[in-house]
Length: 137
Image 1 (cartoon, one colour):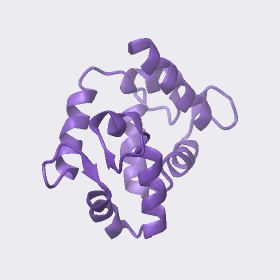
Image 2: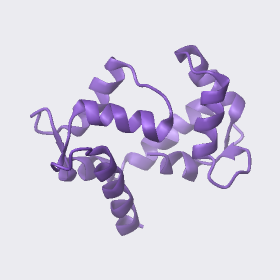
Image 3: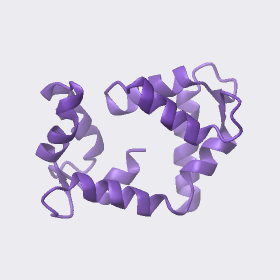
Image 4: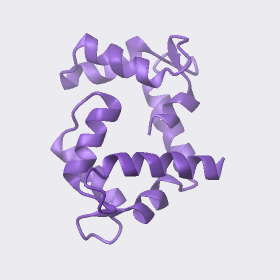
């Protein structure tokens, strides 16, 4: 699983690194979030995300920094907490209505929500499992 995760996250990094210089800038990270998740990210959320990734504070994220953060062991526990917070009915899965409640206040249209949900619900069963939720990164 670790090699599979490393390959997946390396692919995400390479896709984000638009100019192929081996580093991701805040602008490239923002573009990647828009493309991967079909929604914009606030400047504050972008800064928070970027600061978590940019371990040496040089304003760029290298592949090593990105993989170091993405492959951390505590990630599953962190994702589980976020997943449980979204899963309001405690069903063990996230419904489209729960996603809608989460992102509607951020100005996402129903079409954007449907598109985002379809991208994450990879087995098309109408719900998002913890594994699907974790894979969306």
